[in-house]
Length: 281
Image (cartoon, rainbow, N blue to C red; front, side, top):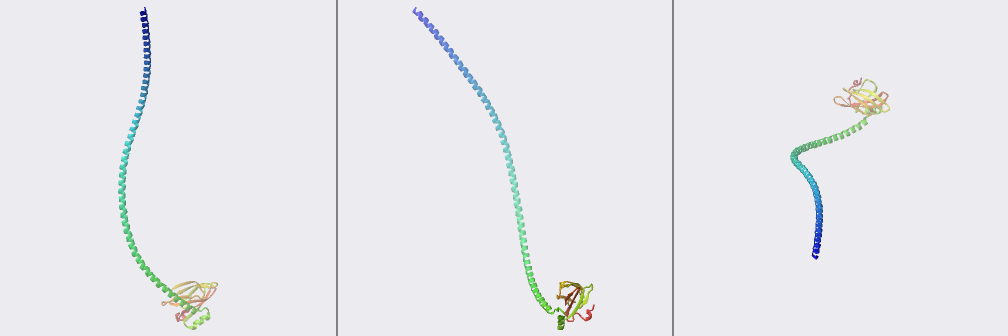
């Protein structure tokens, strides 16, 4: 009896163990399934995330490739433009160098021509300067001679003026003294303002104006075939007149001025005026 009880208890225990084991297995299976589901979910999420990242990376790569392509095209164009610019610059430099060479040749030619012209002008100027120096020396000599002649003439005129001053009669008494000396002939006149000429000592006189206050007068002289006008003539101021082919020197002196009237005399060399008939109008 004991054995069947023990066997019965064993069977129950085994059944319980088997049940427990089965439960444990099911629990473990469920946990495993849950874990597997979670892992699958995680893997699916990772796959989706990786797919999204891959798509994003692909888009980025496409964009980068597009940008790289555009940049490469631009770079190629830029390189072509740079090559063309270098060629153009080389042509410009060559043309500029040729132009500079031509300009240098032109400048050299102009310099040579200018130097030749300057040398010619300098030589001509030196020659002309020498001629001018010679002419200046001649002019200096002529001026010195003229100056000496003028000085001599001044001295002669001064001596003549002094001589005439001693020979001028300012009134009737002084004229009488001169007549007594007998050095020259003296012909007195008394002329009034008129449109007619009056003859005195072989010449003709016409009074144009008499200024009593200023002691001046204007007179017209007809000597040979020429007429001379003297204006603003002062009292007792001699008027020298050259008469005839021999240029005989006459002197006219006015020593009295009245209204429209002058009185004085004409002095001539001895017998220079001819006979008394020549004095008649």
